[in-house]
Length: 420
Image 1 (cartoon, helix red, strand yellow):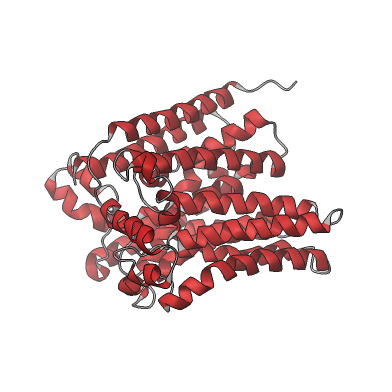
Image 2: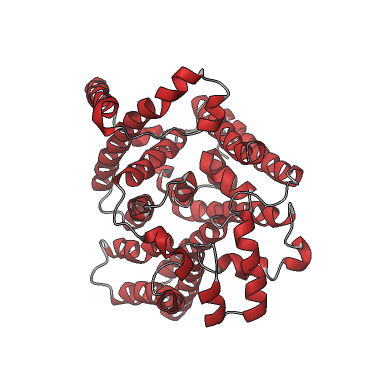
C-alpha cells in the first residue's frame, strides 16, 4: 500500500478541523437573523401559505434567488423553528454533504483512494468565501450541493452509455433534476446547461451521448423555465432591478480576481510563471495604478471593515484605489493562464466541462450590476476543487496556504456578526 505522505495527512486533519470549527462557530452564533437572512424567512411562510403556485412565485419579496431555499427550509421548520442557529446549521450540514459528494466524484475522476479523495474534497474549506455562505442562512450552499450532485449523476450516466443505455438515461434524468433544483436555487447555475456541450468533445459521433446530454439539459430547463416565464425574467418581479443595467466590467473583473484567489490557494501550479511574467505584471500594475489614481477612480477594498481595525485612516483612504489595479492585473493574468490550460487539455471532455462551469460562473458577475459580493464566487468553488485536481500538490506550503484561506474565510464570516 502506498504510504500517505505527511503533508497530506496534515492537510486532511486541517480540513476536518476547519469543518468542525465552522459547525461549532455556527452553533455559537445565536444572534437573530442578520444581513440578508431576515429577507428569506418570510418567504418560507409564504410558501407554506400558497405552496408551489403562481401566487407564491409572484409574491416572493426581497429575494432575488429562486424558491429552492423555501423547498429546503419549509420541511425542516419543525426542527429549526426557522430560528438561529438552526437555520444556519442547515447550510453547514449541506456543506458536509457537498464535501462527501465531491469525495465520490474525485474518487471516480482522479482514480484516488477514498482517504486521498476526502482530503482533496476538503479543499473547499480553504476557499475563503465558502465560510460566509456556509455559516449563515443564505442561499448559495443548497444549489452548490445539487450542482455537484448533478455532476456525479451525470458522470455515472456517461459511464453507462455504451453498456446500459436505459440506466444511463435514468441517471441523466436524475442529474437534470438535480441541476434543475440548483438553478431554482441560484439562476447562475444555468451556465451548466451550455457547459455540458463540452462533454461532446471527442464524442461528436455518439448518438447515445447526445441523448444523455439533451436529457440532462432538457430536464433542468423544463424545471426552471416555467418559473422564469411566470417571473418574466430570472428573478422575482420585485427583484428585477438586480439584472438591469447591462454589463458591469468592474464586477466581472472582480469575479475573475476572486477566482484567481481560489486558484492561488488551492493550486498555484495552474499559473504560468517566470521572470518575464513578473515584469509584465509589475508594468501592468503600475500603469493601471497611475490611471486609477488619476482618472478612473475605481475603488474596491476587500475586508475593508477588518482592515480599518489594522491600517491607519490615511492608508485606508488609499487602500481601495491601490488594491483595485492589483485585482485587475490578477484577473487578466488568471484569464490568460486559464485559456492556455484549457488549450493544453483540449482533448479531455470532462476537464473542459468543469472548466466551462467554473469560468462561466465567474463570468456571470459581468451581468450583476447592482452590487458585487464574494458570495457569488463561492458558487464556483465546487467546480474549482474538481478542475484544479491535476495541478494540486500536497506540500507543507499547501498547508500554509490552506490555513491562510481558512483564516480569511473565518474573518469574513465574523465580520457579519461583529460589525452588523
